[in-house]
Structures are given as C-alpha cells and as structure tokens.
Image (tube, rainbow, N blue to C red; front, side, top):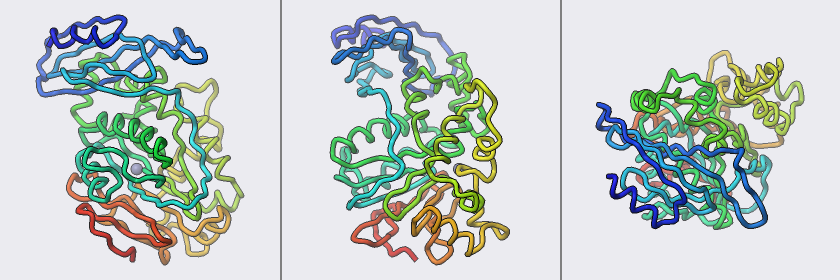
Length: 366
Ligand code: ZN
C-alpha cells in the first residue's frame, strides 16, 4: 500500500504525506474527501492552484494525501487512480428553454449500482459509464445522500458526469433534496452505518466532510432547489399552493432557499420566509400532491398557471414506479430506488413523456 502511494510522486504531486491508523473496521473503503485551503487560493489567468488534502479510508485505515489541486487531477484512492477535474462551481440557470430530450430521476439514496444500471439501460450513459445523452438534459431531483452505502461514489460520479454533459452540449441538473440539506446541516439521522463508522475513523462529524472547504461541499452549496425546463417544473418535494397565491417567483424561492441553506453558516438567523421554505411546506419536504388533505385540482391549476408550466415533476414521495396525479399534471418520479431493487427514469422525447424501466423498456406514461 505504501509503495503504491509513494509511486504517485511521479504523477506530479508536489507534496505527499500519509499516515495510517490501524482500526478494526477492515471492510470499509470510503472517500476521497478532498479539502482545500481557501486562504491559499492563488488564481490568475491560466493557473489555478490550491493546496488540497484528500482523506480516504482503505480497508478500515485512514489515509491522507496532500497535493496541489489543478484543473485535472489524478490521485491515489485505495491503490487505484482517482481522476477528477476541478473548476470553481457556478450556479446553474433555473429557467431553460430549448429543443432537446429530457430525462429525470430521483432519490438515489446511495444506490449507486442501481442508478448506473438505470442510466445505462436507458442509453443516458454508455457501457463505459460516459455521457451518451448528447445535448439532452438529465434532471436529478435530489436525495443522493442517506440510507444506502454508495453515497460518495454517486456524488463523485455526478460531479464528473456534469462536466461530461456540458462538453457534449447537454446538461445535468442536480437539485437539492431534503437529505442533502439535512446532511449539510448536520442532521445525520438517516446516515448509513458505513458513514457513521467513516466519520468515527476520521474523528470528525460527518457533515464536516462536506464543509465549504471541500470540493463536493462547495459544489453542493451551488446547487439549486428547482429548475424549469420548457414546460416542466422540477423540485424534490413540490410547491405549496400558497407560493402561487403569494405570487413568489421561482427565482425568489430558489434564492431565498439557497442563501439560507446551512443554518450554522449564516450570520443571522433564517428569516420567517427562509424558515418556511426549509420546513414541511417548502420545496424539499412538501408532500401535498399526494395527501388526502393536500392540494386540490384548483390549486394545482393555480400553481401551473402561476409558474407557466404544464407539469410539476417531483421526487421525495416514493411509489413502486413513476406515477401521475391530477391527469398527469403532477408526475412522481421517486420510483423507490432506495430499496435497491428497482427504479425508473422519466423520458421526454418527440413531445411525449415515457417511463424508462430498469431494463430499458419504454412504457407510456399513464
Ligand atoms: Zn426526500
């Protein structure tokens, strides 16, 4: 193991150190969690260099590795080459129009293998796991975190896929779900046991592994809570009719939500409205399209008219397959991937919506 690590000096790492603590949890591989020191940010026209530290767990042992962050990076992770490209994350637009295919899925919940299988069988990615959706837009309506034990894999994969999509003229829209927001805020109730152990091995609280000075933490903090693509509006939970009655714009909802994302990082307390958006009736928790006492037909129409869309597409409320409510105006795309057995993807092509099954069969959306 040590020999493998020192051989990395030849790959251009400017500094390298490692240590290993012998611990009992031998089965755990996790990471890398990459931290950078923002104070050492040296930025000019072409050179982008930050000192970074990668923390990993390999067979239950903690390793750290110092290196200079570049645009393209190759570091060691448990004896294998781990490649990633770094770019300062930018906020994605939330109102997009264009003539392209759309695909959407939700609630990966650490089920990385199933997620990959679903994308492959529906030709969103190829057999090498590379973006294969051309100028298409793939929307993931939140909840990559919690429950399952392949969260880190899923996040790094999405981090990379996003860049691949852009190079092809397409786009990956990763929206925040309640589980992203919970973890960033240190609410770790649904953390898989593996990550509880990781956190103990690293001797830091799990949310610190996604703090502002980590690559994935910085990236997640730029993510939106909603996106409108042509006639479709996406969010993790949904939009309470009051938001339409009070004539809130999507820009305002997204802005207020994001500026109050992590409570402990705020200089002042969340405002009443920010608090509302982060609680039960806000876009990441709302379930009112599926409750007996939830939104009425009139309220759904009010929402659609106000936001100028024909459909609202949400995750968060799980069903065995993709389902619709209110004559298809509401589409529920959390098809229970969290159970690790089955999942579907919503597809929009040639002006029609379809369900893509796990095996890649295309079914009409009822
Ligand atoms: Zn959720």
